[in-house]
Amino acid sequence: DSTDCVLEHLLPEYSTHQGIMGLGDNVCCVRQHTTKHAQKFFLYYFEKFPAHQNHFPAYKGVKAADLPAVEMWETHPSEVVTLLLHVVDRSGNAGLLKAEAEQLAKMPQHKALKVQEFKDIFTALRGYLEETLGPGYAKEAWEKASTDICAAIGAAMAAM
Image (cartoon, rainbow, N blue to C red):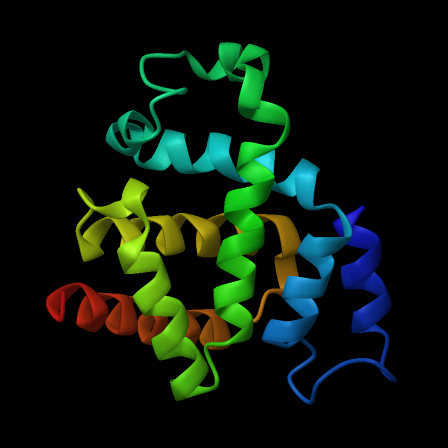
């Protein structure tokens, strides 16, 4: 459970000077239970940005309560969250981030998307993590990573 991870890291010997975990610690907590977090995150994301559910053909028009019955529900949210975390891992390195942003922009399923959709998914991810991780959420680090990632994706889209 992610709470255990948070509590472990909030012990004095594991805490940062602010008493919160860092970005990498937050990513680690999510990765410990990717499937659980990914599915909960997708529900949160579609609640906050209902129009974006239509960007996912398998989920288009499906009520939130019925999403677990969608065939790809077991794997797809995890794949998306894994990809998001992978990009977050690279957000501190401009060269790696640029390469990741270019790959994301070129993905066929992203052709119709604008940078705003990426901003929205990161806004939702930050909100979900803040609620889930509580005092362990590294707010400033996530805001910076999200801003850097979306700027890199925007630049990659503009260059296409």
